[in-house]
Length: 307
Image 1: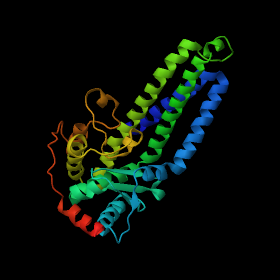
Image 2 (image 1 turned 30 degrees about the horizontal axis):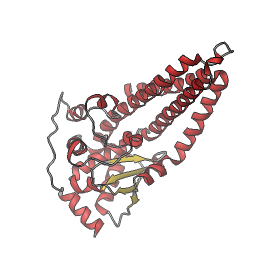
Image 3 (image 1 turned 120 degrees about the vertical axis):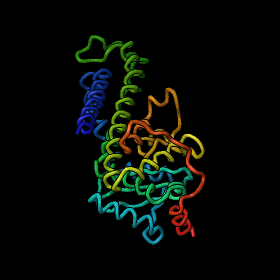
Image 4 (image 1 turned 180 degrees about the horizontal axis):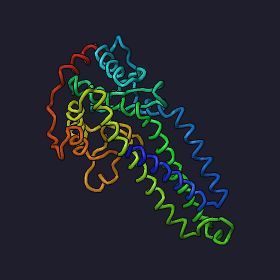
């Protein structure tokens, strides 16, 4: 419940931020423009975001005949979760990772990389798929799409504010409900995108913890997911980094973009050590490097799929 309330508050804060930017840029007309822009972007995100991201990663659907083990495992987890069977897609990348997309549980997609089925054993694959089904069950896909869209709207409006400042935004200082002056527009055009990004990341982090907890229940325990997170984190930061867009990094089980220091402050995911510790019910967890070998389940699956 705490995560749900926090997410609701953060989404409301993001909406207010978009409206305030619109008012600052263009007064009441700017506020109306901001609301219309956010509505149009949310509509497009709701209906087309899954197709866009699957095409971006050249993911291809696989059938039950092509991937019987993966389908059987997913069907078992879906029955436990009380969800419709999602479509299964394979991403042609050697780095292990996965994401879920789709506007609702009836139109959900679970996409896994070739590296995931090559490098993980059955329990670890089950943990990752259960985590993604947790996102589906908790409606995180829709929430994440809305948050990303609202953040995008805030950034677009901030760009408008920057241009308004360049081309005479300061002349509206005294108008009824008008903009905030040239200096105010410049400051807002810098601060607003940062605020929108931080709010979006806070939403993403809270949903990851919830999906871990839901996924552990679906899988019948958290150890498989905990081991998978250890391996995913080690590969992402070292031996097998993934080719991914920052705009979609929040969708994956583990952030595919490695980075330390200041970059961790802007991560779309909670610290892996914290997630693993929560799954194992203790206060800390190391992250040893994964073995450079294919899991037996992944190797058998891959031989069938590619053969």
